[in-house]
Amino acid sequence: MTDVPIQDLRPLLAVLVSFVAAFFVVASYRSPNVREGWTIAAAFAKFGIVASMLPAVLDGAVFEWSLGAFLPGGIEFVLRADALGMLFAFLASGLWIVTSFYSIGYMRGNDETNQTRYFAAFAVSLSATMGIAFAGNLVTIFVFYELLSIATYPLVAHDETDEARSAGRKYLAYTMFGGGVFVLAGTALVYLIAGNVSFTAGGIEELANADPGLAMLAFFLLAVGFGVKAGIMPLHQWLPEAMVAPTPVSG
Image 1 (cartoon, rainbow, N blue to C red):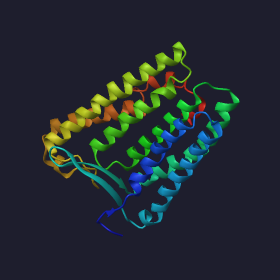
Image 2 (cartoon, rainbow, N blue to C red):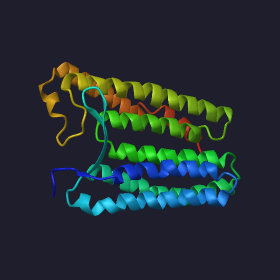
Image 3 (cartoon, rainbow, N blue to C red):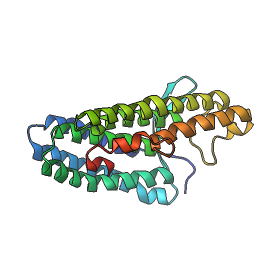
């Protein structure tokens, strides 16, 4: 077991593999077999990258990749594969394999339109999901949550009916312009009162000495913001309408 994170590219690669695959999916739009081959290959590659870190993480290791400070105050864009992050990453990457095969059968079986757009948006969504799982601080998770909102909009509005477009607009209004604003405000407030937004065991220590009223306000902003994005009742009004999306999206 180590207390020092291991500097490693694999958390970044787990994020990038399906993002890169999205470009190959779009480039292969004339050949559905090749396009969907990229989808399957990326799914297995992502799962393999995540699984390769699992034994060491179970032994207490933490894998980390950082772009370095990109905001004032030394705030880093950092990905960290720890035990909790691996739980979500392993689950999501494993499910993507199953859902990719199901998507192919569903989209072809129903002769759906805009299949290339669907598979590309689906791939970018999984990149954002990996980023959320491995985010090392509030700023990084905010960036990936907003990317997830953007990437999943074409999936919600896929059918291009009035109902689907309405559901897509509501989805963006709630998750990006509603929940996103609350998360950003909460993150800014945490940094203002604690000078730190990194995820650490036991929480951000500096908050213990902060003004209780401001700390509670930061908690409220973040709880509401992430609650909207997670579709937690009573902040879930966008979720039932978003089910107009193709069935694999829900999967």
